[in-house]
Length: 281
Image (cartoon, rainbow, N blue to C red; front, side, top):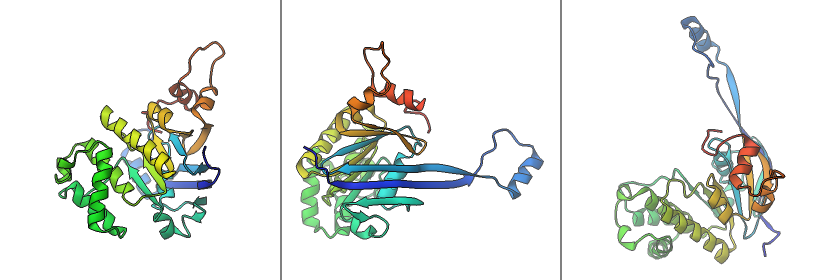
């Protein structure tokens, strides 16, 4: 039974970016010259008034196309970006006012995870652990245990990162995030680009982490099957806004045609957003 205590609470958070507006048609030379001195700005509403609560021991999914705002929201929670408006609390602490305290109880895995490519996975993991005050010997043992559960063979731990496949690198990124035993785990498309076996290994481990540690997990994805398997509740995000939220069962009833016998999460997404998940949002 899930707790009603909220590990993550977000209230009306906004984050807008401003950029030079791209011309809709080909410009003549004098028009380009004019634009050079008088650049029009446009506002990108990456996150536009989002609120949510995630309980202890809950996996909350955010489903959206590329560019829909889900990764920006993750960066706001993880203190990499400051919100323009609204508030974010992690176990009761404001992420802006108490950023250092919040960082100690959370960690993040992203699709663009970076490493020291010439170092081995073991060296990368020990380095990351030392930043959190974890002794090298203890870090090495824990890293090996986590990687083994992810289906990463110990013999690869001494190979340079640049020699590892995309799937193996992503498993190292997940192990790095879990070395600190975070109570809030932010997973930003953690299985994108992985082969089917690696994807299943990672998904199984995410379930184990939730069950063993009663952690709070926020997962962004555009994989419908992954969302259905892992998430207790799902929000659909489009152009920086949540346009639907609920369990998989609740979402499937939102757009069910009267004469239809089946309805998929993908059907719901397309009906509500008018987009395919692979489109730019």
